[in-house]
Amino acid sequence: MKKIDLKVLLPNIITLSGLSFGLSSIRFALEEDFNLAILCILIAGVCDVLDGMLARHLKSESDLGAQLDSLSDFLSFGIAPGILVYMSIFNQESGIGAFACLIFIIFSCLRLALYNVRLESSKNSEGEPERFFTGIPTPVGAILILLPLTHSFMGYYWAYENLNFVAAYIILISGLLTSRIPTFSIKRKNLYVKSRLTFFIAFSLIVLSFINFLWLSINILAFIYLLTIPFSVFAWNSNLNKSN
Image (cartoon, rainbow, N blue to C red; front, side, top):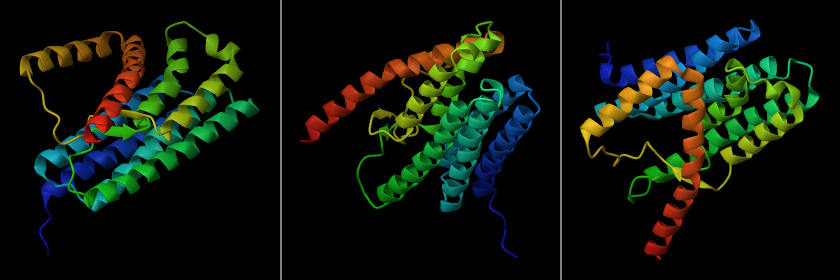
């Protein structure tokens, strides 16, 4: 009997844990417990970061793990957020809302399929590790379409009075998923931290802010991410010019 390699098994267990939280999010959305539904998606996001980091650290990256990660991402950051937004904001009564959420789920699937194709292509090249994503990652897209719902948790109910605007916003985010816009990649293998003390302080502040001001912190980090997009485009163009 072949011995089970825990180095390969552990990242996959974390991936499947994220998948379980994604499924739980759908369940809570159907039960109209929207706070818990978002929390499950956030925990799934933590699992998505941890499984990749652990696989790279243990040097146990595998084709099975990559496929599991994509399937988990599609459910946790494509299907689950789409159902959650539809159930919470559009209240199952808006045709344009159903269309927008459907578009987001479909584009999430396309995004992950395109990412897998690029991942396979990069395995055959001997160039530097990928420094940029093409388009915004699916987990980020999930957080962005959930922002109007998090506003309602803070007492701002504008989304319920502007359903067409929210639907257009979701379709815009869906387009960014499969766009050609370069965005910074945090998964590149040569990513390192220059100062451990600075990293520890920043990490501690983020954790404390999430514990005490969860919804506000999510909105601030999402806004900061959007602000980085012009800089990523500039950095990508600079690298392109240097290579030419």
